[in-house]
Length: 127
Image (cartoon, rainbow, N blue to C red; front, side, top):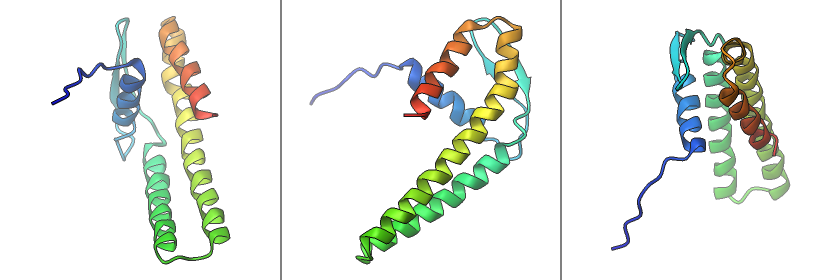
C-alpha cells in the first residue's frame, strides 16, 4: 500500500479560507484569522455569489445532459462558454468583495502577506 503524507499548501489553505468565507449564504459576519490579526466583517454579496454558482451548476448539469444525449457539438460548446462566463462573473464578484472588505483591513494592518496572497489569487484567476 502506498501512503502519501498530505502537506497543506498555502494554496489549499487559501481555497479553504475562500470556501469558508463565502459559505455564508446570507452575508453574515465571519472572522479571518492570520498570524498578525483577525477581523470580522460582512460579505454583502455572499448570497448573490451562492445564487450565481447554483445557477452555473444547474447550467453545467444541463450541458452534461446535452453531451449524454449526443446533441450538437457546436451548441454544447456555446453552452460551455456560457457556464464559463457565469463562473468568471461569480469570481469577479468575490474579487470585488474581497478587495472592498478583506484587503481594506489588510492594508490598514500592513498585512503584506494577505496582499501578496491576493496578487497570487488574481494571477490564478485570470489564467
